Image 1 (cartoon, helix red, strand yellow):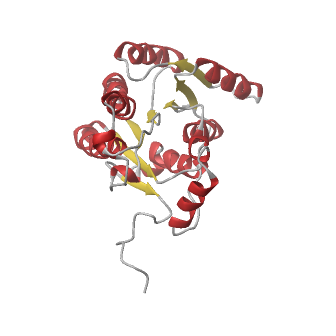
Image 2: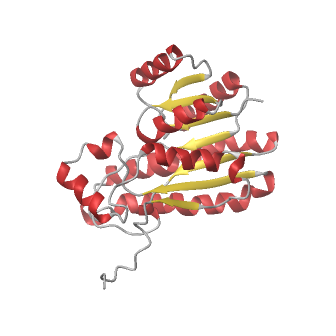
Length: 251
């Protein structure tokens, strides 16, 4: 039977790479994004390439009523769900005392509350259907601290620990919950930085380059599929080794 997956933030960056990979692997894909024009354009392009098992739904994933509508449409259109990829996220920088309240709330709504809402609606279906997988795009910034990234560190830290809690609660229902934790990634959003900033991140990495969306998508596929059948509650860094250093100087 064809596997069915939902991918939030599926029209660009890591989400777009994941969308294309799951289509290539023969899955039916529900692409979710808040930008309707962008989503419809992508689906048109993918269908013109002969991909007939890909669909789009516009959704503000921070709003309960819209996620409920997304759930209803997905189950009706795909006939069920086997995996949910919570990939949509935003980044807002700054030290804690400089962070505006509305920015703090926006980061937590998009990066954390959205996972709560999709799980609220899709987990009961998975329980009734005998299992499923959930993969969230967290970050190495949820596992360790960064300068000038207080809200983002806090939000991704919540995602890191939420996956552990969910893995404990839902493992008995054959639902596995895992996170991918990239460091800086060559998404359009990151590549919008100056070349100086990009070079700094490349140089800081042991591989002397940042990861690519396609590399992260491959790990998402691994965690969503039966290839990772004993992986549960994992926070898997995709960092090129950026997070393994003690910080002590080279000798």
